[in-house]
Image 1 (cartoon, rainbow, N blue to C red):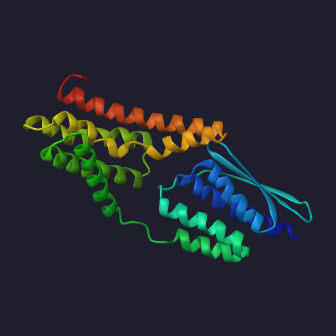
Image 2: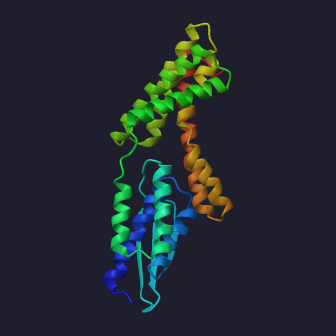
Image 3: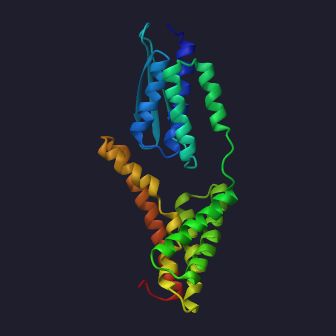
Length: 255
């Protein structure tokens, strides 16, 4: 049997854990399963309610039947598959080893504090990936080099604006505009310029929100899935706006 303060501590930790997963790009059913798995290991009944921008955790002591609820806004964290995998593994460790709450907090803090990939490494990997997309769609070596440079500049501007906490819709429009403007230099060369311009903005495509939105709808989390899809489609629209501005500037046409 837990005291009221202990039950509050458990609820607060489960809410923080679930929020970290949701904000890091995990689909809803996985967040609910992992959170409830940790709650079960602590001998409490756990229910998780996910809304568009908020998350509610309900915890009930199985002995005293005392109930405690806590709600918080879902923060936006950088998408990290490594972090998500480690947090999921923590839920299984809690289930298999019946870890105490202090131990869970310590392990959780170690995972969160784990060094992230260097931003410049991410920058160059994204540029190589986007240049590979250019090659995949038939771009020649000149176009690949231009797309590599365009992605470096566009992605760096995106990182810079995100550090300044600029609205993410504005970030996507400006990043797409800058990347496609740099790629439009291919028009002055004898190269596959159309492919270079079209693929220069692919690094901005919100693949994870689109995929998570579909998964959430299929698994019955309709509201969360629809909100994620709408958010992702708005980001795609921002990319289209930035690319359209470039086409109007350099070609005076959207064709």
